[in-house]
Image 1 (cartoon, one colour):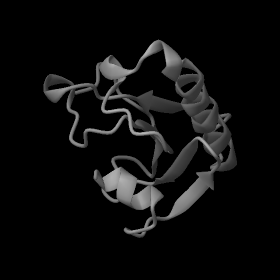
Image 2 (cartoon, rainbow, N blue to C red):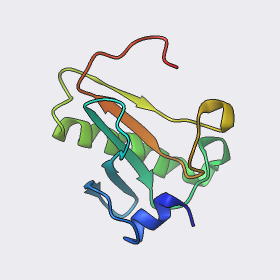
Image 3 (cartoon, one colour):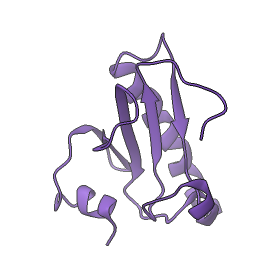
Length: 112
């Protein structure tokens, strides 16, 4: 069971910002920006590269959730960054698909 599955199951505490039948959003415990939260599907999908055609609705829902929580966090006007790490070279540290949403400061380009 991944760290995120344990958060969904309430086996590990998290500061939950949003939850519905398909996703959960919570603050990152090691924030890289003044506002940094994660959006995680409740259905375990190891990484974006392993999503199937049947996962298309939940993938869209994750982006919708990122937008809703970002707006509720006051980021709609100033902007924010959405990041998905995929695989070792992509910086993935937890094998459960998740979106990082970062805001509250200007983001640099290129990242990483």
